[in-house]
Amino acid sequence: MAAAVWALPSLVIIAGAAAAGTSLLATTIAVALSSVRLMPMVLSLLPILRTDRTKPITLYVLAHFVAVTAWVYGMTHLPTLPRNGRAAYFGGFGLALIAGCCLIVVVTYIAAPALPRGVAAGLTFLTPVYFTLSLWTAARAPSDRFALIFGIVAAPFFHAIEPQFDLLWTGLVGGLLAYGIGKFIKRRHASPTDSPSPEDVD
Image: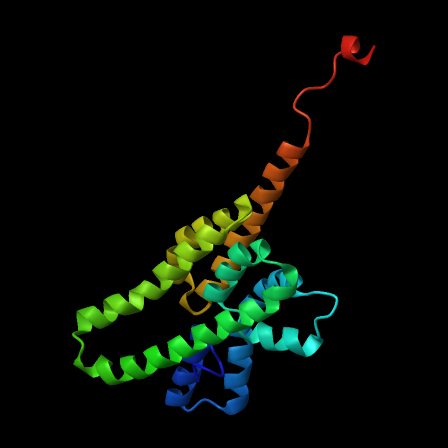
């Protein structure tokens, strides 16, 4: 599953659905909804990879490699490379990531039963910490970082009042607030601070 599905939340959904005996259709819908979050990453990265000669099938294959790590690395490093070599570079990087993750999955599956519960819990906690720090590093606009801050603040609140839809409400509310503040900051920087005086006009 690590090679075919790739994104960690989707793997968790599949494993949980299989353990609960959920139908294939419901599992497919849940995985699709979970993967929607990757669409903005794909849409922002593919124009950086595309050239006039790039075939659509190449972009479809490269889109499979897009997850947080590949997207952060691609957005920060690909613009510095020659455009005609970006697709091959990203494809090699994505294959290396998947191969490494598959190897780690095998080692972890064998070693996990021998780990103390505290160590296993700590390793699990590394994932959200890593994602948060990576997204903060790759953030370009103020709204990106505001979205992370609002998400961290709002998540416990929505989990307390609506645990089944906490991530949905956190994303909607935090994302809209971050978008609004980002637009406000952009307009303030774009608008002139001082109006010209009559002497300047003359």
